[in-house]
Length: 296
Image (tube, rainbow, N blue to C red; front, side, top):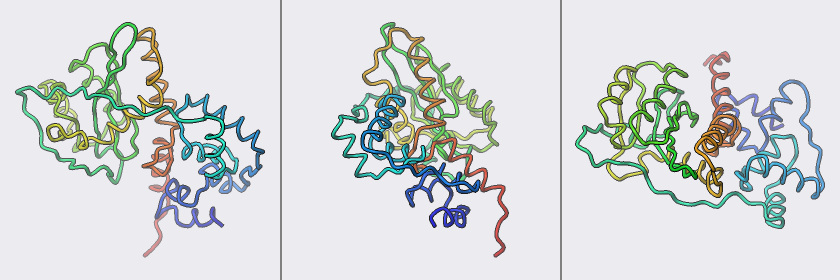
């Protein structure tokens, strides 16, 4: 049985990864673990369509067919890839269209820059070992609004963020300070960003030193050196911002918070994490740290 295999091997492969490979839901495994059985009620096409349309509306058109399949399974309903794709295609259910967005980096300055210590090693072995940071912009009827974030590369969680009407050093300082107060990482954490003047500033470098962090910066003009943070911004823009008109900065700020905390960190399925959310991935990793190790 799939659940029994997952239970036997979860210390080796992890819960999220095992469930993704075997195409079962985490909630189904958890129900089996508690001694119950997951709800395997099969829906008619009409019932499945109504549920998919409700999820599509609830998640604001964020999911395409792969994540829709897993969302249905996580809610206890069997769903095949072929059936979900067919219903989405026939009824015009699709994720928001992708668009490209220009960078906000200002690297034309005389401030010192740090070497690229990260070197595209995007999979640390534990949380609070490598954080990445970047900024983006959102248009409102009141003018531009800027968002700075700090991601933990281990589980792709947004651990700190700041939203301001100006792209000054204060915005990246506030995002870093939030992350530090929330996580209190041990000295030696690598903080990776682009070469922007805000990150290269004396104030920001002093704050990194105060927190015991080691600075790493992307190579000039190479966005792939900070690909996970760029990917987060693409998801944010494509799944929430694109096609939305914000009348005020306050309206945009509230929507950005709603995307980051209740949705992205806690609910959104992340393909890099075996389609677990950042918080579920972290909780599963923490649970394995307290399980007894098998004798060699």
